[in-house]
Image (tube, rainbow, N blue to C red; front, side):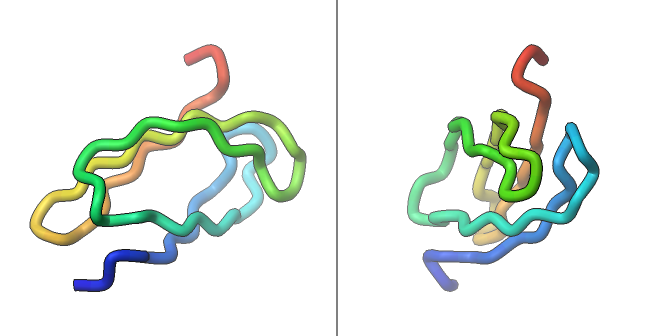
Length: 62
């Protein structure tokens, strides 16, 4: 299993594809990262199950 995984997701604001690098050594994560296109803050929720990252992104106010 790679401890760092790259994932492409759509920004919940502008809809553009963004790339996230997920650290799979941490089982549950919640953090904020700015969109690489529109610069708005995205809430990122990650859980690692069987070595695979399950990712959910949400608006700042969700």
